[in-house]
Amino acid sequence: MRVTATVITLNEAAHIEACLAALSWADEVLVVDSGSTDGTAELARRAGARVIERDWPGYSAQKDFAAAQASHDWILSVDADERVTPELAAEVRQTLTNPGDKAGFRVPRITFHLGRWIRTTDWYPDFQLRLYDRRQASWAQRRVHESVTARGPIGYLTKDLQHYAYRDLAHHHDTMQRYTTLAAQQMFDEGRRASLSGLLFHPPAAFLRNYVLKRGFLDGAPGLIISAMNAHYVFLKFAKLWAMR
Image 1 (cartoon, rainbow, N blue to C red):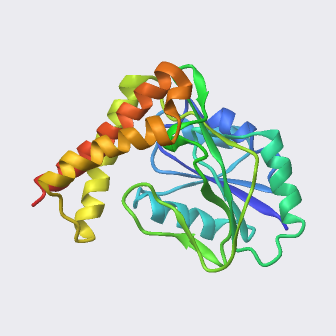
Image 2 (image 1 turned 90 degrees about the vertical axis):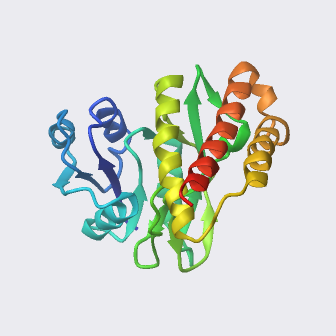
């Protein structure tokens, strides 16, 4: 089976070259750019990718559009701040020699933050359904934390997809502010509402899950910081949901 690697971008000049270099093995590399002003589209073309420029309709809609424009039915969806290792590339190739009845495959994702690869907390293994047959799967229409919904059996790969999500803690915090607003709006649209008890219960529960149950303590200070930031994310999400009443 041939595979198209798709990447959606907006001002990703700092990441796009490394991302595309790690996808050079794919049968096709397709970049859908949303009006970057930092030269992302030009860098992608120079790297040999097919580039389509299109206004931003939202994460899920843009990724579905990218899949629809691909030359091949099997799609490997990658974000610009992610890297496909040679080991994962080989596993994808081997898997597609005989995918069987699978509509897609989940990939474990590992994040680099605060000077190390994080193998604890909710961050690992952060399984993502990124390799899929577009005839049997599509992106669920969500404002944030978009994911693929498959209409068939799902398999699992074992090699990590590397994620360079944050430059530093300030970038981490800024991203949380943006994503919690989108997450609260998504919850509100689904009819969910926040209560005082939820504001009191959910954040500490998130910290205990990350730091104790998901063994964040094994990652030292980074594990503690990430556990606290994840709890703060939950607090912001529910606080913003409460404010939408």
